Figure 1 (cartoon, rainbow, N blue to C red):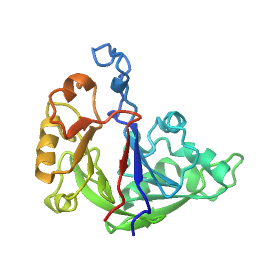
Figure 2: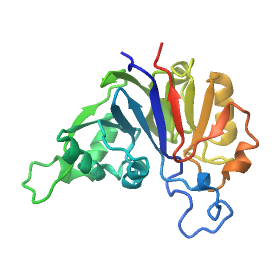
Figure 3: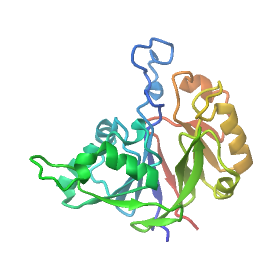
Figure 4: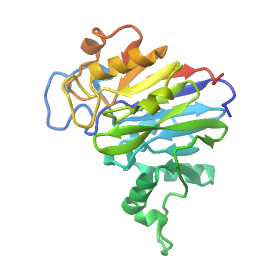
Length: 263
């Protein structure tokens, strides 16, 4: 099932796990006055049919939704359980209060188990003196799943030795924190209008893709547009974009895109 009408994507954060500027660093990018070089931890907001879905609740989640003026949240999808992708989960509580509804969250079994461990107080039946997020958990099995009329397809990725998920939705896909994209996953990433890819830096990294490697992926998959994300302070926005082909740009915090509903 596809969402009715266009799908709006907002980049909530485009930075790596420590963000940019990086605390204690005074390099050229961390000291840049280009607002596109200020990168919170990686996340996107997907809006369609009056619904808002977030992929990953970063430690910056509260700041991100305030900055983007998000006034409702309908679901959260998780790519994996690293701290820069889950630690803002408690900050969904104001949406529970405002909407008076529980919020569904979706994750692979190992990611959901880690979330239950880190946020044990959310899921325990113990008596509480203060509020906790009201969540409905949905464990993914690799098959497509429906979220309020939009079909999401989990895309298996390798993040170093770890297996994680990216997600395809309609004619867009969001892949972050990957060092390799398995061949079967590549087959599910063709015919896209918009593709987000990890591109940490130029130098090789054991758990992340590089600018050059992700450029080769774009060449193979041929999306109409590609955006690199999970960007470190090794990459200045303007300088890096000047060296990229026109169909590839760096994502930046606050970037907004519209993608047509899936055919």
